[in-house]
Length: 139
Image 1 (tube, rainbow, N blue to C red):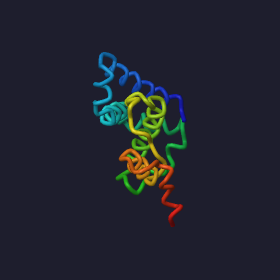
Image 2 (cartoon, rainbow, N blue to C red):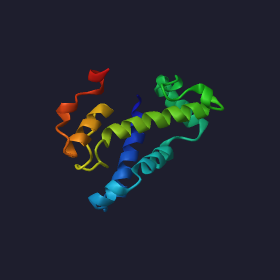
Image 3 (spheres, helix red, strand yellow):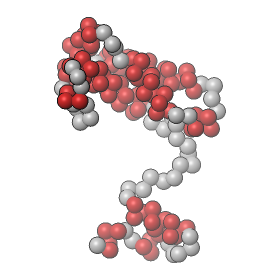
Image 4 (cartoon, one colour):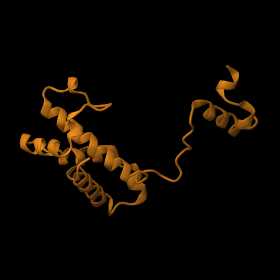
């Protein structure tokens, strides 16, 4: 990853901070943060071929397909490179802002659905969630 990509990601993070600085925690949680992030990242992706070529020359990995961005889905190599730059910036931003838009009161993130089932049954007064085991125990 090149320093230029990291700088573009920092610009996005600064934009997010600027956008949310005067908001209440409730407003921050309720906002469409995914759209905000997409728009700010897209604003940082270069549009001119010369800039794209410079960035790829600094970070050759951008010229290769990733798990989510393939050359077959793009009309030309330049839109492919723009998508790869977008993807790289977005990954950096998402890792650095992890937890900014979530509430401490969010529901627990269970590893699979059988945990949810036991929790619901237990909270409805039908024993404890341990009484139900996991779905894999029944198979």
